[in-house]
Amino acid sequence: MLVSNQQTLDPLMTAQDWMSDGRDVAIATVIETWGSAPRPVGSHLVIDRSGNFEGSVSGGCVEGAVIAEAMEVIESGQPRMLEFGVADETAWQVGLSCGGRIRVYVERLG
Amino acid sequence: MDPFCLKKLNEERRARRAAILLTDIGDGRDRVIRQGDPIAGALGPAVRTAFLSGRSGIADVDGRSFFLNVHLPPPRLVVIGAVHISQALAPMAKVAGYDMEIIDPRTAFATQERFPDVVLHAEWPQDVLEARPLDPYTGVAAVTHDPKIDDPALAAALTSGCFYVGALGSRKTHAKRVERLKLLGLADEQISRISAPIGLDIGAASPAEIAVAIIAEVVKTFRARELQPLQQLDRTA
Image (cartoon, rainbow over all chains, first blue to last red; front, side):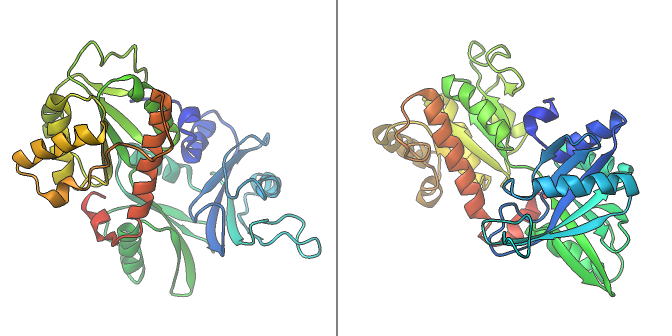
């Protein structure tokens, strides 16, 4: 059965499609979680240079920040480790309202 | 991520083969490991454990940190019956990440027009399942209401360790089904694994609502299974 990746919403398949189209792509991966984290370890968010994205690393709380970092990773080619915790005005600008903590690895494809 | 690794990983995933993407989070280098690939050194046990448990995570080995992202084949849902409920179930299963196939020997029902984008087998379940055996990564939902079609598939599902076995029909219908399955030589213990009436009790009335109840029950059963001993995952990975 052949189905389009849009239907299956599979970020890694989407990343491969984008790569074939010659688009610059960054892949963000949840590599560690503590407490109640919305998405499990191994979850992906893929982002292209124009800010298109597919997948998720949280329930939508930190995606914006990850996309912004991904732009810089696409530019520099240097992977980054991001950490997000409980939303707190003093310590964090973006955070997880659920009270968990996650570590996200962002790397460029290629 | 190395583009070659992404292609290779996706190729393994499309073929329903277990694979791990191993990333050295110190220098960003990665590689794809297939189950059974020889892994030298201290990383070997971490890789074997990850394949068994299906859990992704970090392994610290010789002062370096590796991230192991485990990709096990997605669960499959085999539906017996190309009926109205199955038409609603097909797109729901796909979005929920299940590979769905339909078996129904009645060629008037099992048409590609009624089921675009679905793998359809217009044959008897026993013939299809002989060529493509069921496994613990597969759930079976029998929804034809016809014992000639449903029963052989249910018997095959119960003897193959399918993670989910559901059958459409009232309690009265199911009581008769239980008697027939006993005559086929199935034990009470096996027969009691059948979810009947099928689906979570959400008061479903329409075919689409019954499909919601079925997919919800399939997801619930598959996730509950993760809490059980993980060794059985190895059998099909």
